[in-house]
Length: 81
Image 1: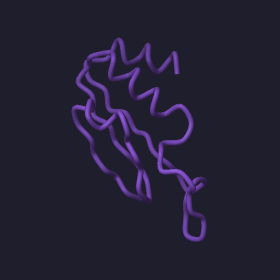
Image 2: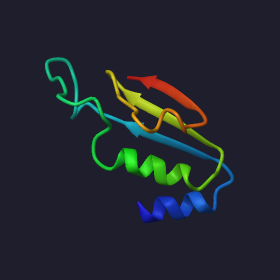
Image 3: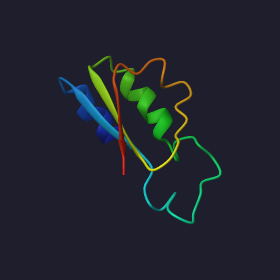
Image 4: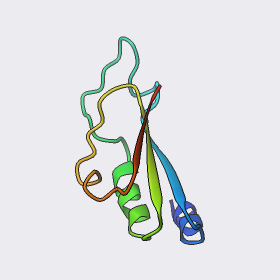
């Protein structure tokens, strides 16, 4: 995370890909929570605090709750599997 944030500080623009993979959800395996797994939510908020033009690419196969992220993200692309 520190290396990624450092790269973001030196970037003109940021494209941040987050989401879930087949390990978290697939045919026959459902998730019990709709939030982004791990530290992704806090990482997104840290990236957004850099005040750089940022696009979030959300990769998933099912519903994702973006909670506090949605009101502050400047651009969001939904990239289903």
